[in-house]
Length: 65
Picture (tube, rainbow, N blue to C red):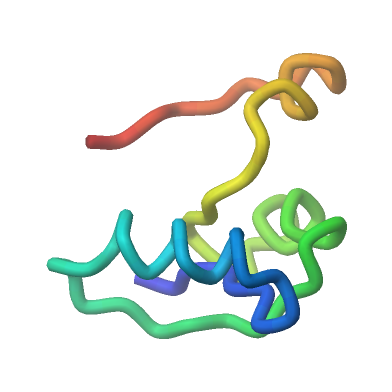
């Protein structure tokens, strides 16, 4: 699975590392504000992002646990 990672955002990187710790992932270097576009363009399969921003944009999201 390809997962978006913003290496410049300590919070996003740390949360991503924790969320996907037990899964085989291929990190995809994406700036935080470009994560939604990367997902829409299928450059990545998953990401950790702020749900409030997704809801404001009326995105349909699926939480996987």
